[in-house]
Image (cartoon, rainbow, N blue to C red; front, side, top):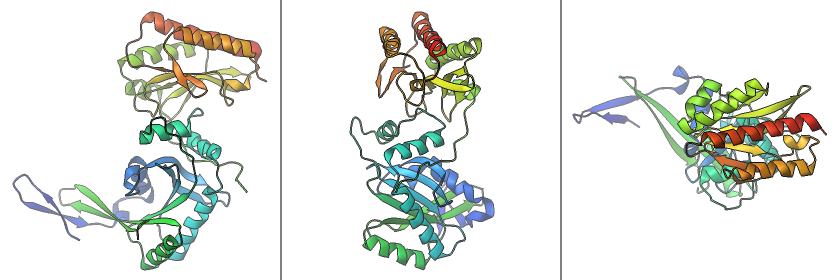
Length: 347
């Protein structure tokens, strides 16, 4: 196949086919697919929830995703393995993923996002714009094999698996470069849908954001709130855990960090907001704070008039400039929670 670019004067500029490995490392394609998940499947978008996910047999899934219907998607990049090994490894990974429950998939997402509050259901609803629709996760599994060349052996085996009900897709891509240095990548679906649980699952995490980058990603309304929160953390010696997008504010109890609130920027799935976590079993739920005190803290945060329910948490969307009085109320609530955690300690 020849590929041409069309210049302003109507002249053609040919793009030459270049072997991908000549100019890129293997992980580059993985990076591109991770950043452009809608290019993985033709018939459905993909929410990537894990990268280099370790299986119970010691393998690593290149990318693990969830499609619009909630089914898991195992993405395997074809390297220099034999066709037999490529298919066998993909099936092995799918057999591992098939045994994962929604809680374990959420654990993969949290590890990947470096965010202990991340909700798979909420990320999924936001990513696919599903509103209040409920989805059952991992009812079925899909396998996607991606490579520069999908060999006849892989095509034939994948097509056979499809005919027996397995959901296998093979995607072939071609890389081009013009004489001026512009790059193109084409892809074609050559095989598709048409033609006991593991104890712990981990995923390679995305890089953590820094305070400077986080504040830079917020608008002026968010910076006005979060800069004061971060100042409070320094004044009160409250550890900040940075995730791939946002942060959690914690209380240090003899080396055990208890998260009680979170901040997210506009480019996160939660949008720009402040999360008050009072009943999450993984965070403040680890403390011995009495129920009546938790209720008092919930009432205090509701009296601000800024919060809406968000699962077990309360969410304050920051869509306008909060007044100094409103920000003071948020910080006062933070200090009240810190005092309660330090007073009652861990369970």
